[in-house]
Length: 206
Image (cartoon, rainbow, N blue to C red):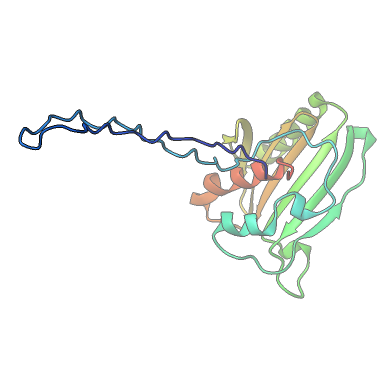
């Protein structure tokens, strides 16, 4: 991690002493100079900066690291994250797709994952936004509740269905979706957790 180092030199205050003065008559001394209080600069913590991700990662640690996932959830998920690389679909303008499955118990399969994070790329910004809008409207038609929420400095749509809740949005040519499977995260914590995971998924490591 790069950081700026600041060096501060403090000059030592020199106190003048009256030499040769009579000890019988006390001399009034000037108050010592005030030395300014210097507060050392602190290194600000790095906050995720979301960017378009046209080159999709090939490892879930480059999407949301397991350590970050566990810290955000406040618990350690079982198993290792698994990645599934999707295919391009020129018919809808999709140029790439990956899905990362988190929290799969031992000897269980993808449907048993607790959290699924997907990233996709499209031919242009408009196509990416269109795919998000179509997905949201399809969920709404199935009876899901849809709410706009903040995802970093961007916006996303929180979609609350009966058995699954998801946060979906786009940035440039990329789209992101974070799925809460089988009501793993309680409803009251969705807005506190899903946007954090979405923001991290769109923040490449440095």
